[in-house]
Length: 377
Image 1 (cartoon, rainbow, N blue to C red):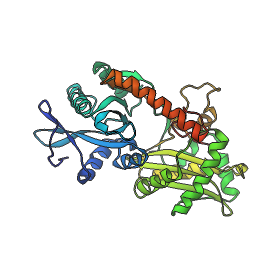
Image 2 (image 1 turned 90 degrees about the vertical axis):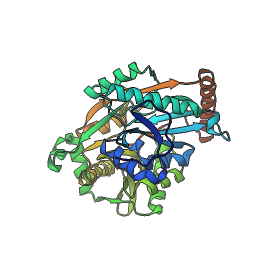
Image 3 (image 1 turned 180 degrees about the vertical axis):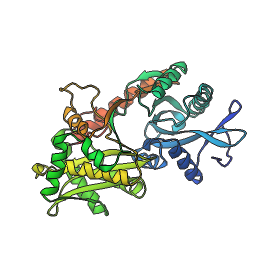
Image 4 (image 1 turned 60 degrees about the vertical axis):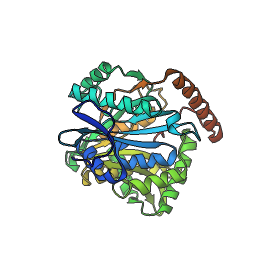
């Protein structure tokens, strides 16, 4: 895909790295989606995170002769409050970059240019988390490339494991793959009169958020503000997401936010009431989300995070049990890797972020380590 020429970042031939601006958004999205890029590398996700203090930077590797885009990276940048990014910031590349890892020369050129661009413009360090099954052939290849590129393993931000459901079988087969108790609960909810519909108004989102607050208190995890989820619904729902609501006789019992990007559906956020739980609304809700995703063209459904191990004493063991009943397979991600450009500044930044996280946790009366919503089931 050709991209309009802008001032290039200095590059060894035959590639150049360019900043992708808003007028090139459609080109970015077509390329990223065509290579199976993750939602977290979509333009919309960058817009959403911009509402919470991150500054998205979209970069594309361009083949000089054809002027075609051959790799992309959406970098989320965050610095100290009230200081410009050029004076120091952390750069985060979630579930990316989007490139052909099977080409060592391409990977080397991409990271050479990326490191030069970021370090010259105030990045203290780069952290990335590739979107690949670590045990697959591609995952092994990527691990080798990262080792060759001297990127160091670090503590991940995103879940290190998930369950992925293949949506290519027909609906009858998908239902048959559910564990017996899961099928029973789906049918029970239907018999008892639970219904599922799409959220269509901001008031629907507000009602769902009330359930999310209840879920947060019950299961002891942190959540974003209402404005964040309203932004998520506004930004993603038109093309790349749905908020599904389960109701019984007009009473809202549960709701889940499911995204759809590059033919992959992702279960992002979930909430449920303390009432009428015997009606099993979460089971019907999840099944209807799977049916919707398949009908919308998705070929996989990501349940978005399970505990790092199978131990029954894991904090999210109950979540794991629920997600394991839908017929998907467990995958392990490679984890996180980082490149530190300025070691002293990085140490100071880590101390600042740790203090900030502790302060926010005290203000919100929650543990500091809950940086990602856990899904209530």
